[in-house]
Picture 1 (cartoon, one colour):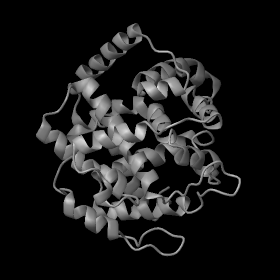
Picture 2: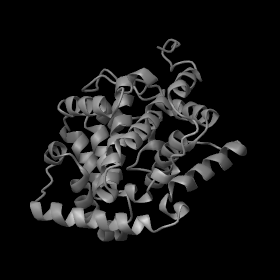
Picture 3: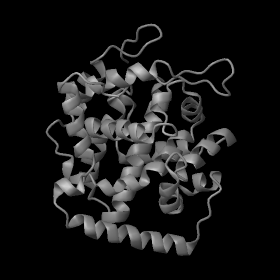
Length: 292
Protein backbone atom coordinates (compact mmCIF):
# COMPACT_ATOMS: atom_id res chain seq x y z
CA UNK A 1 0.00 0.00 0.00
CA UNK A 2 1.16 3.52 -0.71
CA UNK A 3 1.57 5.96 2.15
CA UNK A 4 -1.30 8.38 2.49
CA UNK A 5 -1.24 11.78 4.19
CA UNK A 6 -4.21 12.34 6.48
CA UNK A 7 -7.21 13.25 4.36
CA UNK A 8 -5.22 13.22 1.12
CA UNK A 9 -4.06 11.00 -1.74
CA UNK A 10 -1.04 8.69 -1.74
CA UNK A 11 2.39 10.27 -2.00
CA UNK A 12 2.89 11.31 -5.64
CA UNK A 13 4.94 8.95 -7.77
CA UNK A 14 4.74 5.82 -5.60
CA UNK A 15 1.98 4.20 -7.66
CA UNK A 16 3.83 4.83 -10.90
CA UNK A 17 7.08 3.32 -9.63
CA UNK A 18 5.30 0.11 -8.69
CA UNK A 19 3.13 0.16 -11.82
CA UNK A 20 6.20 0.40 -14.03
CA UNK A 21 7.55 -2.79 -12.46
CA UNK A 22 4.62 -4.84 -13.77
CA UNK A 23 3.75 -2.98 -16.99
CA UNK A 24 5.80 -3.01 -20.18
CA UNK A 25 6.80 0.57 -20.95
CA UNK A 26 7.96 -0.58 -24.38
CA UNK A 27 4.54 -1.90 -25.46
CA UNK A 28 3.05 0.22 -28.25
CA UNK A 29 -0.65 0.53 -27.47
CA UNK A 30 -1.42 2.78 -30.44
CA UNK A 31 -2.43 0.01 -32.90
CA UNK A 32 -5.17 -1.08 -30.49
CA UNK A 33 -6.83 2.32 -30.11
CA UNK A 34 -9.91 2.83 -32.24
CA UNK A 35 -11.63 6.21 -32.13
CA UNK A 36 -14.94 4.55 -32.97
CA UNK A 37 -14.99 3.32 -29.37
CA UNK A 38 -16.19 6.80 -28.44
CA UNK A 39 -19.63 5.47 -29.39
CA UNK A 40 -19.56 3.70 -26.04
CA UNK A 41 -19.00 6.84 -23.99
CA UNK A 42 -22.50 7.14 -22.52
CA UNK A 43 -22.74 3.39 -21.85
CA UNK A 44 -19.44 3.54 -19.98
CA UNK A 45 -20.63 6.44 -17.86
CA UNK A 46 -23.72 4.42 -16.94
CA UNK A 47 -21.62 1.41 -15.98
CA UNK A 48 -19.33 3.51 -13.81
CA UNK A 49 -22.17 5.33 -12.05
CA UNK A 50 -24.09 2.10 -11.42
CA UNK A 51 -21.95 1.66 -8.30
CA UNK A 52 -23.70 4.03 -5.87
CA UNK A 53 -20.50 5.52 -4.47
CA UNK A 54 -19.51 6.65 -7.95
CA UNK A 55 -23.04 7.62 -8.97
CA UNK A 56 -23.71 9.87 -5.99
CA UNK A 57 -20.15 11.18 -6.09
CA UNK A 58 -20.77 12.50 -9.59
CA UNK A 59 -24.32 13.63 -8.86
CA UNK A 60 -23.38 15.59 -5.74
CA UNK A 61 -19.93 16.77 -6.83
CA UNK A 62 -19.28 20.42 -5.93
CA UNK A 63 -16.82 20.68 -8.86
CA UNK A 64 -19.22 22.17 -11.40
CA UNK A 65 -16.45 22.72 -13.95
CA UNK A 66 -16.10 18.95 -14.29
CA UNK A 67 -19.77 18.07 -14.73
CA UNK A 68 -20.69 16.56 -18.08
CA UNK A 69 -24.22 17.95 -17.87
CA UNK A 70 -22.91 21.52 -17.48
CA UNK A 71 -19.69 21.48 -19.49
CA UNK A 72 -19.91 18.58 -21.97
CA UNK A 73 -17.02 19.67 -24.20
CA UNK A 74 -14.63 20.33 -21.32
CA UNK A 75 -15.57 17.12 -19.52
CA UNK A 76 -15.13 15.10 -22.71
CA UNK A 77 -11.68 16.61 -23.18
CA UNK A 78 -10.73 15.75 -19.60
CA UNK A 79 -11.85 12.13 -19.93
CA UNK A 80 -10.27 11.50 -23.33
CA UNK A 81 -7.07 13.18 -22.21
CA UNK A 82 -7.01 10.87 -19.20
CA UNK A 83 -7.34 7.83 -21.47
CA UNK A 84 -4.61 9.13 -23.77
CA UNK A 85 -2.17 9.89 -20.97
CA UNK A 86 -2.90 6.66 -19.08
CA UNK A 87 -2.44 4.40 -22.10
CA UNK A 88 0.15 6.28 -24.14
CA UNK A 89 1.90 8.67 -21.77
CA UNK A 90 5.24 8.39 -20.00
CA UNK A 91 5.49 7.85 -16.23
CA UNK A 92 6.18 11.58 -15.76
CA UNK A 93 3.14 12.50 -17.84
CA UNK A 94 0.92 10.13 -15.90
CA UNK A 95 2.16 11.61 -12.63
CA UNK A 96 1.44 15.14 -13.88
CA UNK A 97 -2.09 14.28 -14.91
CA UNK A 98 -2.73 12.43 -11.66
CA UNK A 99 -1.72 15.55 -9.72
CA UNK A 100 -4.09 17.68 -11.81
CA UNK A 101 -7.03 15.29 -11.35
CA UNK A 102 -6.30 14.98 -7.63
CA UNK A 103 -6.93 18.71 -7.26
CA UNK A 104 -10.55 18.21 -8.32
CA UNK A 105 -11.00 14.88 -6.54
CA UNK A 106 -10.08 16.32 -3.15
CA UNK A 107 -13.42 18.12 -3.05
CA UNK A 108 -15.53 15.08 -3.94
CA UNK A 109 -16.60 13.32 -0.76
CA UNK A 110 -19.92 12.49 0.85
CA UNK A 111 -21.64 14.71 3.38
CA UNK A 112 -24.00 13.87 6.24
CA UNK A 113 -26.90 14.27 3.79
CA UNK A 114 -25.51 11.88 1.16
CA UNK A 115 -27.45 8.61 0.68
CA UNK A 116 -24.17 6.64 0.60
CA UNK A 117 -20.64 7.27 1.79
CA UNK A 118 -18.02 7.96 -0.87
CA UNK A 119 -14.67 9.59 -1.43
CA UNK A 120 -13.13 10.24 -4.84
CA UNK A 121 -9.84 8.79 -3.56
CA UNK A 122 -11.49 5.48 -2.66
CA UNK A 123 -9.40 2.89 -4.46
CA UNK A 124 -12.24 0.37 -4.75
CA UNK A 125 -14.38 2.96 -6.54
CA UNK A 126 -11.48 3.94 -8.78
CA UNK A 127 -10.84 0.27 -9.57
CA UNK A 128 -14.45 -0.09 -10.69
CA UNK A 129 -14.17 2.97 -12.95
CA UNK A 130 -10.95 1.60 -14.48
CA UNK A 131 -12.60 -1.82 -14.92
CA UNK A 132 -15.50 -0.22 -16.79
CA UNK A 133 -13.09 1.57 -19.12
CA UNK A 134 -11.24 -1.68 -19.88
CA UNK A 135 -14.38 -3.81 -20.21
CA UNK A 136 -16.10 -1.30 -22.46
CA UNK A 137 -13.07 -0.91 -24.73
CA UNK A 138 -12.57 -4.67 -24.97
CA UNK A 139 -16.25 -5.28 -25.67
CA UNK A 140 -16.51 -2.82 -28.54
CA UNK A 141 -13.12 -3.87 -29.95
CA UNK A 142 -14.22 -7.51 -30.04
CA UNK A 143 -17.56 -6.64 -31.62
CA UNK A 144 -15.84 -4.56 -34.30
CA UNK A 145 -12.71 -6.60 -34.99
CA UNK A 146 -13.12 -9.99 -33.31
CA UNK A 147 -11.26 -11.38 -30.32
CA UNK A 148 -7.51 -10.96 -30.02
CA UNK A 149 -5.43 -14.07 -29.45
CA UNK A 150 -4.87 -14.96 -25.82
CA UNK A 151 -1.27 -13.72 -25.61
CA UNK A 152 -2.08 -10.35 -27.14
CA UNK A 153 -5.16 -9.92 -24.94
CA UNK A 154 -3.04 -10.71 -21.89
CA UNK A 155 -0.59 -7.97 -22.91
CA UNK A 156 -3.36 -5.45 -23.60
CA UNK A 157 -4.96 -6.34 -20.29
CA UNK A 158 -1.74 -5.92 -18.32
CA UNK A 159 -1.09 -2.56 -19.97
CA UNK A 160 -4.66 -1.48 -19.23
CA UNK A 161 -3.92 -1.60 -15.51
CA UNK A 162 -2.71 1.96 -16.09
CA UNK A 163 -6.35 3.01 -16.28
CA UNK A 164 -6.36 2.55 -12.52
CA UNK A 165 -2.73 3.08 -11.51
CA UNK A 166 -2.67 6.49 -13.20
CA UNK A 167 -4.88 7.48 -10.27
CA UNK A 168 -4.80 5.76 -6.87
CA UNK A 169 -5.30 2.07 -7.67
CA UNK A 170 -2.20 0.06 -6.63
CA UNK A 171 -1.03 -2.41 -9.30
CA UNK A 172 -1.71 -5.42 -7.07
CA UNK A 173 -5.39 -4.42 -6.88
CA UNK A 174 -5.79 -4.93 -10.64
CA UNK A 175 -7.00 -8.54 -11.13
CA UNK A 176 -4.09 -10.79 -12.01
CA UNK A 177 -5.18 -11.80 -15.52
CA UNK A 178 -8.20 -11.57 -17.87
CA UNK A 179 -9.87 -14.58 -16.24
CA UNK A 180 -9.54 -13.01 -12.80
CA UNK A 181 -10.86 -9.77 -14.22
CA UNK A 182 -13.93 -11.53 -15.62
CA UNK A 183 -14.65 -12.99 -12.19
CA UNK A 184 -14.26 -9.58 -10.57
CA UNK A 185 -16.51 -8.01 -13.22
CA UNK A 186 -19.29 -10.57 -12.79
CA UNK A 187 -19.24 -10.31 -9.00
CA UNK A 188 -19.13 -6.50 -8.95
CA UNK A 189 -21.77 -6.10 -11.66
CA UNK A 190 -24.16 -8.16 -9.52
CA UNK A 191 -23.95 -5.51 -6.78
CA UNK A 192 -24.74 -2.50 -8.98
CA UNK A 193 -27.89 -0.43 -8.84
CA UNK A 194 -29.03 2.85 -10.36
CA UNK A 195 -31.13 4.95 -7.99
CA UNK A 196 -33.74 7.32 -9.48
CA UNK A 197 -31.75 10.58 -8.97
CA UNK A 198 -28.71 9.05 -10.67
CA UNK A 199 -30.89 7.57 -13.44
CA UNK A 200 -32.39 11.00 -14.15
CA UNK A 201 -28.91 12.46 -14.59
CA UNK A 202 -27.85 9.56 -16.80
CA UNK A 203 -30.91 9.94 -19.02
CA UNK A 204 -29.99 13.59 -19.49
CA UNK A 205 -26.57 12.45 -20.72
CA UNK A 206 -27.91 9.66 -22.93
CA UNK A 207 -30.41 12.00 -24.61
CA UNK A 208 -27.73 14.68 -25.08
CA UNK A 209 -29.86 17.25 -23.27
CA UNK A 210 -26.74 19.25 -22.34
CA UNK A 211 -26.26 20.13 -26.02
CA UNK A 212 -28.18 22.64 -28.19
CA UNK A 213 -31.53 21.49 -29.54
CA UNK A 214 -30.29 20.66 -33.08
CA UNK A 215 -27.70 18.27 -31.63
CA UNK A 216 -30.31 16.61 -29.44
CA UNK A 217 -32.68 16.16 -32.35
CA UNK A 218 -30.02 14.80 -34.69
CA UNK A 219 -28.16 12.54 -32.28
CA UNK A 220 -30.21 11.87 -29.17
CA UNK A 221 -32.24 8.93 -30.42
CA UNK A 222 -29.24 7.27 -32.07
CA UNK A 223 -27.12 7.74 -28.96
CA UNK A 224 -29.80 6.09 -26.83
CA UNK A 225 -29.93 3.11 -29.19
CA UNK A 226 -26.16 2.71 -29.28
CA UNK A 227 -25.94 3.11 -25.51
CA UNK A 228 -28.55 0.43 -24.94
CA UNK A 229 -26.66 -1.90 -27.27
CA UNK A 230 -23.40 -1.51 -25.37
CA UNK A 231 -24.79 -1.92 -21.86
CA UNK A 232 -24.76 -5.22 -19.98
CA UNK A 233 -28.38 -6.46 -19.98
CA UNK A 234 -28.74 -5.92 -16.23
CA UNK A 235 -27.93 -2.22 -16.52
CA UNK A 236 -30.06 -1.85 -19.63
CA UNK A 237 -32.97 -3.05 -17.51
CA UNK A 238 -31.99 -0.67 -14.68
CA UNK A 239 -32.14 2.20 -17.17
CA UNK A 240 -35.55 1.07 -18.48
CA UNK A 241 -34.21 0.67 -22.02
CA UNK A 242 -35.89 -1.63 -24.54
CA UNK A 243 -33.79 -3.99 -26.65
CA UNK A 244 -34.96 -6.69 -29.04
CA UNK A 245 -33.34 -9.52 -30.96
CA UNK A 246 -33.76 -7.41 -34.11
CA UNK A 247 -31.96 -4.52 -32.39
CA UNK A 248 -29.11 -6.88 -31.51
CA UNK A 249 -28.78 -8.11 -35.11
CA UNK A 250 -28.81 -4.59 -36.59
CA UNK A 251 -26.38 -3.35 -33.96
CA UNK A 252 -23.98 -6.22 -34.59
CA UNK A 253 -24.02 -5.54 -38.33
CA UNK A 254 -23.33 -1.85 -37.72
CA UNK A 255 -20.34 -2.55 -35.48
CA UNK A 256 -18.86 -5.12 -37.83
CA UNK A 257 -19.24 -2.65 -40.68
CA UNK A 258 -17.51 0.04 -38.66
CA UNK A 259 -14.73 -2.42 -37.91
CA UNK A 260 -14.16 -3.13 -41.61
CA UNK A 261 -14.00 0.58 -42.40
CA UNK A 262 -11.75 1.31 -39.45
CA UNK A 263 -9.31 -1.42 -40.46
CA UNK A 264 -8.66 0.38 -43.77
CA UNK A 265 -7.80 3.72 -42.17
CA UNK A 266 -4.26 4.96 -41.51
CA UNK A 267 -3.32 4.68 -37.84
CA UNK A 268 -3.52 8.44 -37.13
CA UNK A 269 -7.10 8.57 -38.42
CA UNK A 270 -8.12 5.33 -36.74
CA UNK A 271 -6.89 6.53 -33.34
CA UNK A 272 -8.49 9.97 -33.58
CA UNK A 273 -9.26 11.75 -31.27
CA UNK A 274 -7.19 10.01 -28.56
CA UNK A 275 -3.77 10.90 -29.93
CA UNK A 276 -4.95 14.44 -30.66
CA UNK A 277 -5.79 14.87 -26.99
CA UNK A 278 -2.36 13.54 -26.03
CA UNK A 279 -0.77 16.23 -28.21
CA UNK A 280 -3.06 18.83 -26.62
CA UNK A 281 -2.01 17.63 -23.15
CA UNK A 282 1.66 17.88 -24.03
CA UNK A 283 1.25 21.41 -25.34
CA UNK A 284 -0.66 22.45 -22.22
CA UNK A 285 1.96 20.91 -19.97
CA UNK A 286 4.81 22.50 -21.92
CA UNK A 287 3.37 25.98 -21.51
CA UNK A 288 2.12 25.59 -17.93
CA UNK A 289 -1.57 25.69 -18.84
CA UNK A 290 -4.30 23.97 -16.82
CA UNK A 291 -4.42 20.26 -17.53
CA UNK A 292 -7.93 19.61 -16.17
